[in-house]
Amino acid sequence: MIAVDHQDGIAVVRLEHGKVNVLDLELLEAIAATLRTLADADALVLTGAGRAFSAGVDLKRLLESSAGEVEAFLLALDDALLTLYDFPRPTVAAVNGHAIAGGCILTQCCDYRIMSAGTIGAAELRVGVPFPTAPLEIFRSAVGARAAELVLTGRTVGPEEALALGMLDAVVEPDELLDTALERAAQLARIPRSTFAHTREQLRGETRRRIAAGADADRRTRALWHSDEIRGAVRGYLEQLAAR
Image 1 (cartoon, rainbow, N blue to C red):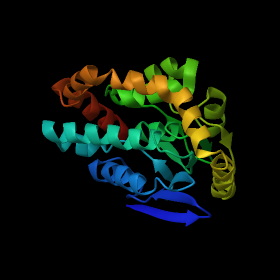
Image 2: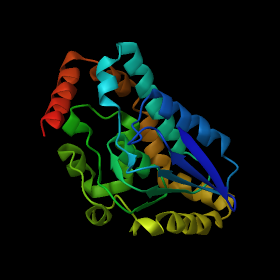
Image 3: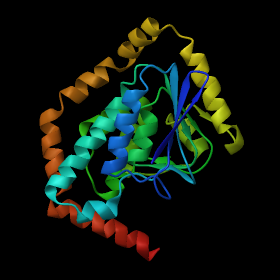
């Protein structure tokens, strides 16, 4: 499900979960648990196996889930995202392929984002599901002024356009992806730990405070995810995909 390799003090975490690394309860729990074991690494590179970084939430399984299972999934999603967002050392996303919806938000949790292939975008509203506070605020903080348009349209874009929109920091050829990510991670790892921690708080502290303030809104969000209206929207989206 997750493979970890260590290269000169840098932990390379590779998602290996099915064909497109869909985000289900098991993978989200594994991401959070794995990251917690790596807190002593000098830096971290997150990448995927196969043709996708992560295609996002397992929508078919979502439709088959009870209200309690949907709640558990959303809580695990927040835990995985925030464990990555709060990782104590520099993080680099090596985006090897499609990074859609939750997969896109995983990339935005990282300090530096490099992509070599596929498409990327926050497609939640195109699917019909509302954003929990954490992924919305993480995306807003990472992308800036273009966040509202990208969220409302749910559009996905290729690497070059994503770079122009601020979703990425670099675009490279596939055979250069991991080496470039490791090089950037090594550069960031040379920042003293206390300096990095202080600067990270300056950059992300306000976002974390907005996330903490969203607890009440998130209870309403979780209720919407397992409502008949939202399930109907997801079902319709999947039917449209199947008809293409």
